[in-house]
Structure formats: C-alpha cells, structure tokens
Amino acid sequence: MRLDRYMADMSIGTRKEIGTMIRKGRVTVNGTTAKDAAMQVSPDTPVFVDGTPIPYEEWTYLMMNKPCGVISATEDPRQKTVLDLLPKIRRKDLFPVGRLDIDTTGLLLITNDGALSHRLLSPKRHVDKTYEAVLEKPVGPDDPAAFAAGLLIPKDADGDGFTALPAKLVEGDSPKHVFVTIREGKYHQVKRMFAARGNKVLSLKRLTMGSLSLDPELHEGEYRRLTGAEIKALKEETL
Ligand code: URA
Image 1 (tube, helix red, strand yellow):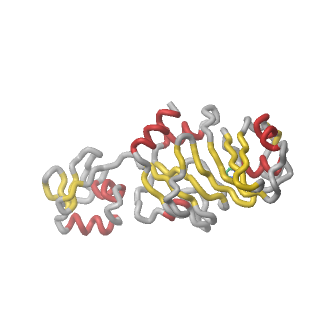
Image 2: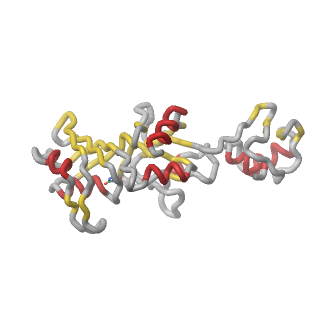
C-alpha cells in the first residue's frame, strides 16, 4: 500500500497533513527519510514519525455505546452514522457489525474484520444478544414462558411473519423493566416480539453480543478498543 494510506489508516493525520510531514522529512521508512507519499510499504515495514514507531494495525475492533439518533451504517447523505462518531479514527474500511435501530442504544462492535462479522451475524451460529428494555405495560405472567417456547411473530409493516427461536425473558427491578436474550437478529426483532405479546418497547439497549459485554464505563457515543482477551473470546466462540 502507499505510505500515505498506511499513515492515514493509523490515524496519523489527513492525507494533506501526512504529505506535509513527509515533505518536512519527519517520516522514515526502513531507516531512510521518506520522500514520496506514494512509496509502497507493507504492514510490517518499519515506519517512524519524528522517531516514534508507527506499527500498522491490520485489524481494528472497537466497542461503541451507540447513542439514540445515529444510524448503524457507514455513510448516509442525511443522517449521522456511528462512524461519524469516530473522528479520530480515519481508516476507511470500518463498518458496524449488524444494525441497531436509530433509537436503540448500547453495544455495537465496529471493525474491519469481515470474516468475524460474518460469523457473528450468521443465522447458523445463534450468537446470544441480551437487551435491556423498558416496556409500556408490565410484563405479563405468561410472557417468559411464551418467549421460551418461541413466539409466533405475525406479518406486519416490518416484515413477514416468523416463529422466533426460544428466547429468555427476565424481569428487572420493576415489571416494566426487562432483560431479553435472543439468538437471532431479525429486523426490529425485540420490538416485534413484545408487540406480539400486546406490549410496546419504549426504550431498548443492547448489553451483550456473544461473550462481549458493553463496558459500563462507556457513556453513550463513546467507544474504546477491544482488549486482546475480548477479541480472542469472540473469535473462539465463532470458530
Ligand atoms: N431488536 C429491535 O427491535 N431493535 C434493535 O435495534 C435490536 C433488536
């Protein structure tokens, strides 16, 4: 890849800023001052800026606490996307793993690892996802058993009808505050599951995806890199 792409991927600056750094002799490649932003480097070429090594990170894994009002997409002409919330990260190949509705908050994995994303989202793998929901009405006494049995979701404006896989419904600190664990990810799934029980989701937050749990230190709109242990666990459980 080009040297300026390598540096931009590692969020060193804009292409223009990087060009200036190179012209000023601040960048060395293989121990020699770089002269040309277009020179070819590879992920293991030693690149230094002002004497500081800039290792190339091939795979990036970020955990975001998605806020309301942004969409889970890479770009959109009208609406703010989750990637717009990462101004310091300039690499262009990141995308969110799956979608949360615009009004859903919580755990969103953002990466450039297409293979891992594919495995996490594969309908065959049934990766558990736990959501915290606030409901319009108290959860009914038969609701946990109905969720566990596999709810019949009728056809509606959001899509065709289907039978949901068995899901776990647990009451929180009040009958309108619940935790739901589902093993699939159909469009508006949790909202449709409660609608099928005559209830309505007022707010929805994702807490987990497989072994990955939302870091309670992250405020809405904030993100952090996954730890090595978190990445390893996600890879191992989707082997
Ligand atoms: N289920 C929903 O209804 N919405 C989400 O954003 C995620 C799961």
